[in-house]
Amino acid sequence: MALPQPDDLATLVLRTDFTDDTAWDALCTALDSADGASRVSDPRFSGASVQALLDEELAAEEDERICEVFLADATTLTDPELPLLAVDLYDEPGRTFRVPVRWYPELAANLSIANLDFADYADAADPSGTFRGFGGG
Image (cartoon, rainbow, N blue to C red; front, side, top):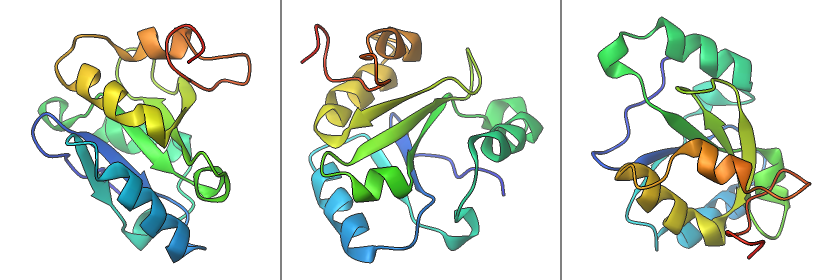
């Protein structure tokens, strides 16, 4: 179950919930404003846990590893804010936070050029574990 490689200067949005195609389509439409989103909808990742994805990434060759992945899980596809689950695969493997799709373009752009890193966003998450902009958005 090796993780797909995102496009150059892009982040990977990986679908892990396949119960609602309409919600997935809505998420994809919302992501269209983000140049840096490589979307993957592959049923082999259905229900994949964070730990399973970490294990796969650690087994990959070092030059094939990615730094983070954004999961479109059941929570993402049932919440009106479409909050992706951001997962750190590099600095603090397994660290997570949620990011509503409206904040994803900013986050993806900054991560892709290393202007900010995963921890900058995770540290700015609110008490619910959701990033809603710096200063609470």
